[in-house]
Image (cartoon, rainbow, N blue to C red):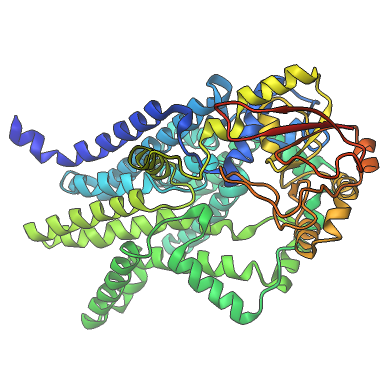
Length: 576
């Protein structure tokens, strides 16, 4: 019995990590330190706003931010991640999403490995489980963690469809978009499938009808699950900020540098943490593998080896990421397909983390294939090393690391870190007290010194907000409010005019007045806004983290100052 347990040591590591991570987040609760960027400031408040207003399933309604925009611009209801927020409070939903991401990645990798390895799967189980865990715990874009995790599942389903007849595989593929997201993943998966269709047709010299049927089935599933997105993109005639977004135009040298950097390091939304271990192992194996083919005069093997295909995909994804910043090429794409104007087709890079760890698995598998005990031990140690590097990396979205660090710092130093935890960031009790005191009843407001997301989460309708898809006319109307600040800070003007997704109240002196840290200081306590433009859009309140020095001059009246033991903020509420 003991020998059997020892032989399954890898299960203790995998499930021990999942249970330990869940326990950390359960014990810490809302004191957990959760990433803010494109997370607490974006998707979580949107989900909470839909819950507050009961608009998850409603049609023909607006949601109360950015002056009132269509519910159709927010995440689809037919999404596993969205459903978590329908059912659970925001913090438990977020942690459930994190744990589900790991489980889905692990199961997807196990199923795919079993299909690829066939009868030899049992021998490689420790490597499969550790590699699946490594991929599952990558700290990628949190709202799309499940779509990242489910990529190997899509590959598995397509392999099954190609090799085995059966309606169940098509049914599974139809519902696959419940785990994915069209703009970031689905469209690219369909493109990869189309490329596979052409390649298999040429390779097998036989029409791959099952793959064509799979393309149709997946496309139909995407349309059904994300009908709001398709309706907005294809049927809507509203001119949006996508038409004025500028992605930048790099020189040839800058493009080449960007390609090299994204290949070696990835990008922050898709951090594969591959630079220090996975990359060296994969590169060494690449040269070893192809030198072996050359030495044995098997040139054909170079072009047939799946490992080289994975390497080619990594290079392709990196090149596409770089040439996105070639303005001429981007203009051609937008001219050929106007609905794609402003769309970031360089999101092919989101598939690179899976490809890196698939390549890493095949490189380590070679050590297993040496049939030497030392080879297996080394392969397992390298896989475990990859897991440890990911866990201990303090990357942007590594909530587990930052939460543990914060708790350890508090225990050892007797003081809190500068990072705000989940509960402090939103400070629900503080804002509830302020709303009750001022008799708030849904009037339009804006945040100064806070992320507008904080107001949105707490049921306050905002004229400001963060969204990559809203009307150009509203951007221009909101710009009139912040024009005095933009006229004073050229960097802020360029940032808003060339992008505009963050429609915030800007400082007239500092590059950013928005801060999610415990410590907070500003160089200027004046607010630079056009009050008449604010009132024209219906603005009534400004919730500020700063006591405004020129409030009287701007016609603002201090309605109240609020503090709470559970909040790091001092909240000043001004009325107009």
